Length: 88
Image (tube, rainbow, N blue to C red; front, top):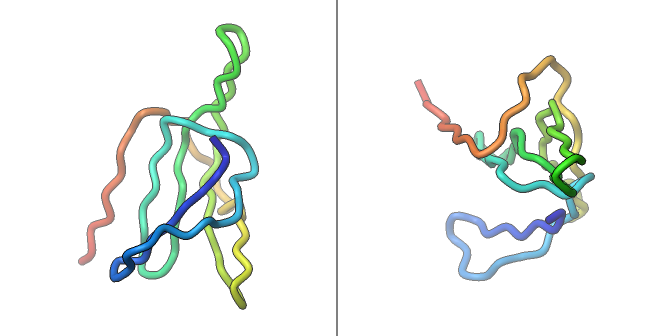
């Protein structure tokens, strides 16, 4: 899927957001402060057509307009994984 819905910690309703740049499943989302980051996943279209995007995306919202941007860096592809934010 490429559609995104989000709910704030204090919210009671889901809200549609800007779709992902490409469909993905088996991904992980974390929040770091007010930022939402997406790691890994696959847009598996068929047995011989697998793509594992090697990027991290960040959802930014300015003036009620949300956009996904790639966080620069070199990453290892991941699918069906998890992530935890540890605050020190």
